[in-house]
Length: 491
Picture 1 (cartoon, rainbow, N blue to C red):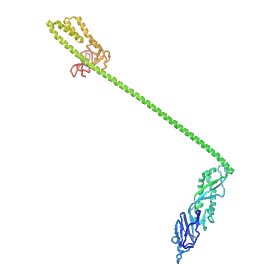
Picture 2: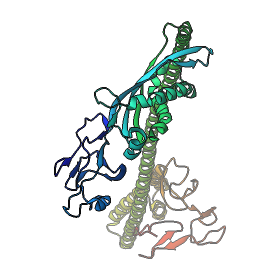
Picture 3: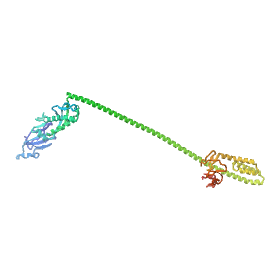
Picture 4: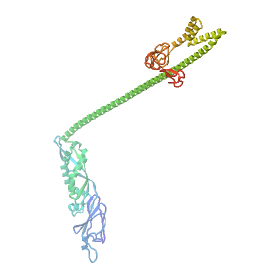
């Protein structure tokens, strides 16, 4: 035994527990524990302490039990001790398998079928002290298999009965519980693996081991068994039936999709046609509205034109009335003036003699002129009678003189109510709407009672005045007139 020594793990990675080969260390010895390892220190057959990853000196500061074992003279203590290293890594792909066939009773036909099962699992140490005390004991260590490790005992041999029993007892029940068709068992290996792991785990944990993963990788089916052949035939028929149902469902779905598509397409086409028809109706409505508005505009324009024409005609008639009466008054004043001058010149001529023939010639000319103007023909005729002129000639001259006035009167008519000048064929006045009646020269229509009455200042029927006076010039204007016949002022 060396004075000082270094203790460390020198086993392989497939080993779960490895015992350091040397014993009886002194307090100068050092212990090295790597990651994923732990070391259990035994002193005098007792588990003194557990060391995790790190470097330690085996003295009383780390192991209190060594205090009483130190030699008081030399200061060096030699004592009996042992060190076990626990491998905490997960051992991957550890193979397992059943030692015999697993009997499975097919639930549909009730026929027995024998199955084989095998696979792999991952294993790790969860409690090294429990595994060491319960399973290793005083051995040099333990691994899954005994080949190559030099151990007298292996975990495989220890747990094979447990694995076989749990798989046989639970594989058939797991297949039935999950309603798995035995012919399709390969499709459900993951579910079956997890179900078997749950059943196996308590037996391994009792010895300080855990199963992170458990894989049922192979289920051997009895292909040569007549019962299994019958099951496969029934499965084939069932598969064909399911395929036919799936195909029918697919066709049904396709038909429904096609019908839905056609329905949607028809609906969309109907919506498009409705939109187009609505657009056409809207366009037609717009055209109708445009035509209607154009007709209304033309009607309004025609009414405006007619009103303008009417106003123009009324204005022209008013102007003609004003001008006609003004010219008549002027003509009458000129005739009266000529008549006065003629009478004034006649006195000396008649009383003086000499030149009488000349004066008479002038009077005759004056009488003819006045008769031509149609104003004083009766007076001239009477004068001619007084002067011994032939009545026949005077009468003829008077008749000839009045004929132009009658002719002028036949060409236009003056409204007896408002004085508006109307065409000779008019039946109603354009200004006041009064019915036109033919009147004698000395007659008129009373604007108050609407009856015929001789011309004058008052109506002989109702007694109302017939003459107004112009506020501008004071001239007398027939009642109902709108313009003064003298100055044209609007009344």
